[in-house]
Length: 113
Image 1: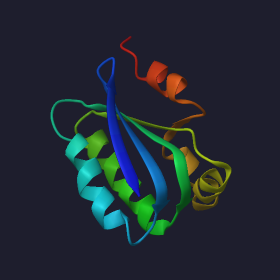
Image 2: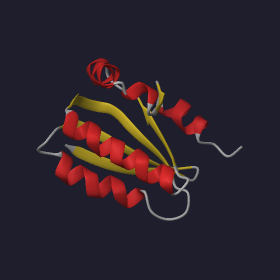
Image 3: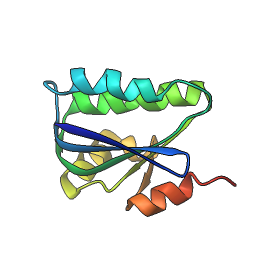
Image 4: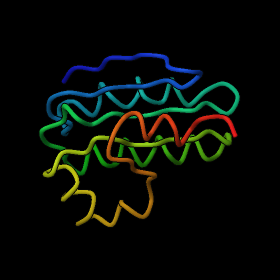
């Protein structure tokens, strides 16, 4: 799995690529939870490069959104591939997460109001 970070207009964008499974979730969780610190962080997780996500990967994202909500942060997921979207739908996670089809729409959703 590859994790890249970018900043766009006060929003941290974390792009993931590869497989998010029980082997990679242990590396991913502390990296993502680092972003859930500070005062009301705004975060986009771009899943365009993710070919597979397991329940371990879903758990990491669930921990992240829970932590961000505790500190009044915001999270938007974007660019879910068909197979990843199916996993989210089957798990009932589409109702838990803010999801946008593209990175620009995710960034717009977190733009200052």
